[in-house]
Length: 115
Image (tube, rainbow, N blue to C red; front, side, top):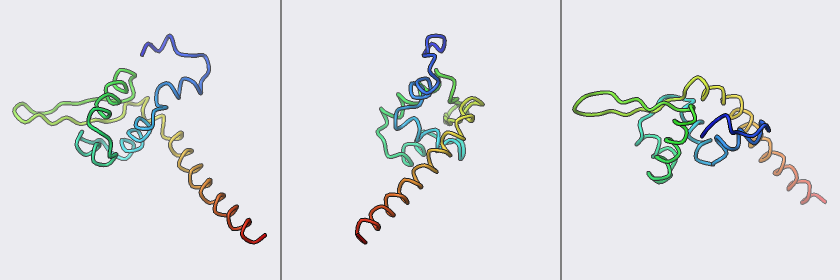
């Protein structure tokens, strides 16, 4: 994606780059450690095609690096770039919000049953 053509709206930029469900989950996993394709696929539970497409797009956008090691047995690992790591507070805020939402909904349900 040509970053010079991105919206002037910062939220729209974020959604354009990582708004897809799988991309956010990829970032979440890669914040923990670098991973090989198979490990990422297993942790996420998505199809290989979806994962390949997301990783390619994220690599083009400068969020992920694909690193090949070895000559005969090629080992490919993925990790976040410095820009990718700047998404940590976004992921942390989303996790916190998700926990709060579940807690608040549970409280709302308890309140309804008491009335």
